[in-house]
Image 1 (cartoon, rainbow, N blue to C red):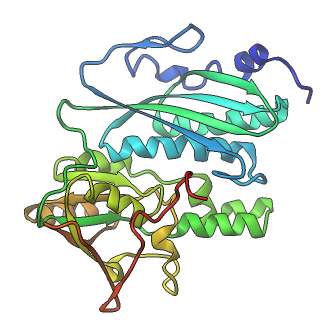
Image 2: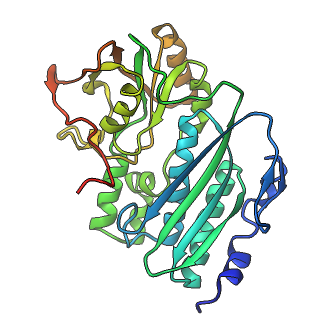
Image 3: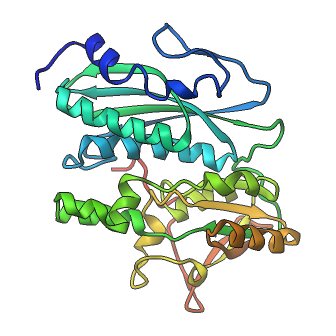
Amino acid sequence: MSQVDEFFLIDKYFKDIGSKFLSKKNFILGSGDDSAVFKSKNNLCYSIDQNYEGIHFPKSLPPEFIATRSVLRSFSDISAMGARPLWFSVALACDFDEKFINDFSKGLNKVSNLLSVPLIGGDLIKTSQKAVTVSVSGETKKNNHLSRSGAKHNQNIYLTGELGLARKGLEEITKNFNNNIYRKKNVKRFIFPKLRLEISNSISQYASSCIDVSDGFIADLEKILIPSNQGAVIYLDDIPRVDKSSLQDFIFGDDLELIFTADKKYHKKINKLSVNSGIKINLIGHTKRNDEIKYFLNNEEVQFPRKRGWNHGEK
């Protein structure tokens, strides 16, 4: 396909994505104006993420999956707040190849239909290195949102799902690029991350703090404990993971599972929520008063460097 100008591409491939959901999300104006306009009586959550080729996704990744992965990763932050998705916007930097943009828009449509959210705007920039910036918003009932800093002494610590699927999927994409691998469970987890939206709103009834595993379990757990002035005892054997022969699944990010804390009195209700939703919620430890964090594996203490995980500022 030919390379054409920004306004033609926006009008052809992005203008109407999710437009059928605008009225349901209380929009007065959608995309196409200088700004979208909507009304809301509840609390709004907002988040923005950047995704760069070679850093957040491999160069070999097809454009449809660049789109699904980038947008779903952003909505995972909304899930961690216990919020309901409202809308998203996307700024795409690419070389304006129309085939790439056509396939990228297919990925946006998939996410729009999956979450019933409209694309309300964005930008298109011509450049050689591909990059995707995604803004998302969600809504919670007043005073019912989750944050990172609410953990308290002697609370249970929980983790949803399993660690390591996204890491394994990225390895398979990097080592064996072909169209068939995108059907594999691990690869699907990397290109089409599972969000815990179906239970995060219910968790908000019991949880005092919550975060999604995007930078690695160890790093993200500390993002709850340090602002909350809490330490913890963590039993790594109780965490389902892909590779039990190494510690990599505790360090690698992108699993987008939820870590949360809750009073022990809610344990039975959380177990019931796990059973009813079909999503495993694992009790993995408890908080304690000082700032010491101890990890145990096979009845032996394991040491992790503080704040280990993905950090763009590290050399």
